[in-house]
Length: 517
Image (cartoon, rainbow, N blue to C red):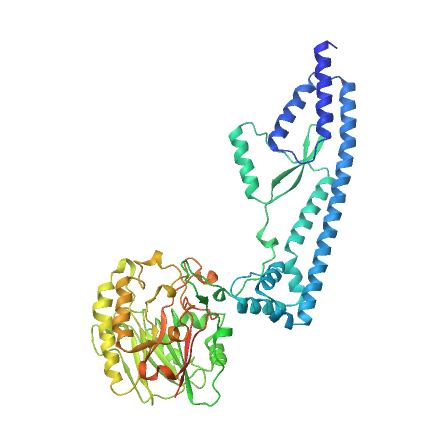
């Protein structure tokens, strides 16, 4: 052996010994340079030097694998201990629900976060969220709060299995500084786990990007989205609408009528919908009259649809679009027989799309309306504000000469900024243009009609429409387009004006009005 080869062999031995004593976590760049050093040193190292280095590395490898196994057991015990503490706390609160009401806002938020529940809103919302969560079973709780435990244990099992099988994972050497920086940045942004890597004869641990399958994740509990304030420019004092806490107690004297309105966005599709059905809505709300918009029926479909009506609601009145088949359409379904019914506004230019049905009852007129949308590119904006809105307003004033009027339906206008999630981004969107908002105010509100929901809830953010395109319903990014407007003379008789946001089947949800008569 010449002197140069001996020097290289000693240097390689020192490098390997120093490397074996390092911590398990190495940067990818270090692994690459180390692999290059080991490969180059092999060419000039004697067999005895190789054997000595390999012996030291094997000893280190055994101690590392044993240490890893011990870490895994310790982490599992810690996770189990945390779960036991959370279980005890959960049971303590569940056994004494009164503790929830006595908690401060900070305590409520801390407790909800501990169990993995979103902690947004005021105290009433937090109390409701915690009570709702406490109603779940202990098994469901375990699934929710042990997400991190499941993930950690899964990773540790993978690490142990890799160790037992002496699995070797190949890592490409990072030779360029820019490539290393990009890799490092990706690692910081992604979940990581320990990975066993073989470099030469050494087994070490590094970090690698963790890919988690969606099926393996435990879904964390989500609060009812409409109970969380969702608005891009919320003002001081605004709160989210929560029908569980904001609806008054039902009237018991029987001298009232309950009206509901719903843009169903296609009645035939709704009847096939497997979720919340109209029958369940009737059983839960026990309404007297239901107004429908955007039924999209043709006249030939009406008779077959009538046969599907709920028992007790034999009175139904339908109008369909003749100008465009399968478009627009409105209806009134009632268990109270009206005194009279008429269709349209009495103006041929407005009445070909089946947008208005009026039913006369003892103490009021009920006008069910589907106001024309200004459309893409605001093509119908001029028609909407210069013809339709004034004509509907004049029609209402004529009816008011004999008795009060209730105007309901999809009025296709978010009147104020509180009525839309993103006001700044929709200044030129149909339903929120300045022209439509001014027309809404001048033709209806300034003419003596009262927005019953806004009167009852002046600072409440409540939406009735969420677009399908961006999944706005799940995040409560919506619009309030559906209304009950009433004559000023009966505004004080409104007991409740409410939204039913949990009913699916359409991009709109039902709204309701309880009126003392």
